[in-house]
Length: 351
Image (cartoon, rainbow, N blue to C red):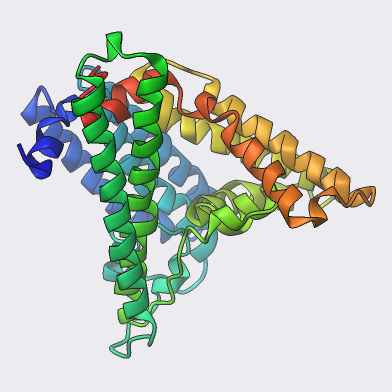
């Protein structure tokens, strides 16, 4: 059996049980961008803000409840899509309210074909491509190739070394396969597909930039979360939570701390929706991961305040950052999530 056949046959954890229900849920999700566009056009900021958050809550809750008997992996994908598209409305309200609105076509391009959270980039299209668009396409193709190679190694380890029954696999062997699989998936999606989209939009003069920017070079948690890792998520959290709360508390020092804590709490809750809710287990663990990182960033601020220069040495900063990121990573990607959403992709732990 070739690799493509393996990939298709081993994704059984994502096979739906009720085709009619899945079609209905997909149609429901497909309405979200249009409802969001209507909400963004409301002149009252308070009303638009309330309706955008109601859309987000109702969309995610509806998808989760309707798909309660479907496989965890499928629930994860559709919950994430509903959440992403609904949060575009929240970001749109905060970014575009009482400003020139996007034409519907531009709005749909922003919602459906870009993972970033800056709708103003899509105000105007042009036939004059940015000169570096091809560089991002080539980079995306390269990263996709590396990702596929790592995933292929994980599949090989499962079928030639480990076997199909994860219940009898030695713990350390299972995690060796996972250590290839997770970076492979990230390279495929975060550094591959996302770079292809950057190149595509820069071909039409849209100033999209990479959402993942050499995270291995991070020398602090502040740099990791604020400048290098998943900038779409950082943008979304800043626009929808941090800035509104900070403004409401009149930009005071206490307001900044409250807004920062709220942003990390919000990040943890969103990851609960994407990781724990689909598998109906592990609740609180992703939230704990982000709370720990909030503590780590508070510690970094204290270092700066008291003139402690421990992070000024790049190698120490790197050790500090990656200790915080990697040591508690099993809390974020807990075993029920791996069994229900990740391991089915390579034919083990189907839930």
